[in-house]
Length: 124
Image: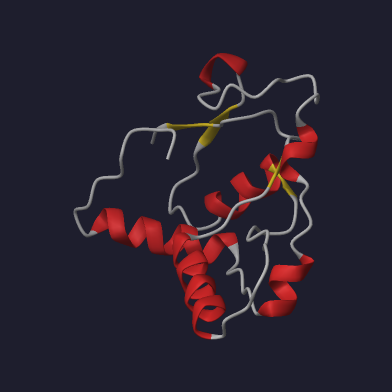
């Protein structure tokens, strides 16, 4: 089995959102005519937590490469950019944003790939 190249250091804060959850939220705010800005992201996780959630649905054990040279997002490894991924999503959640668990997104992604689909090259 291959190696999972990770985009950041293990303790890097990260926020994410499945595109389907974003689409559902956009439909909700559009049809509900909700005004104002929303921060449509998940709560803050660490990259290690997100990687472990994804690894939980992979049938074989994958090694994780945390080496900085595989960082395709070019995040500083000194923590100086950590605030970028610690945004407040409370207003979006109060308006109806629902964020599926990362393992559910991962499971669907694995199923999609097994069906013969090919993801785009990273970062994606």
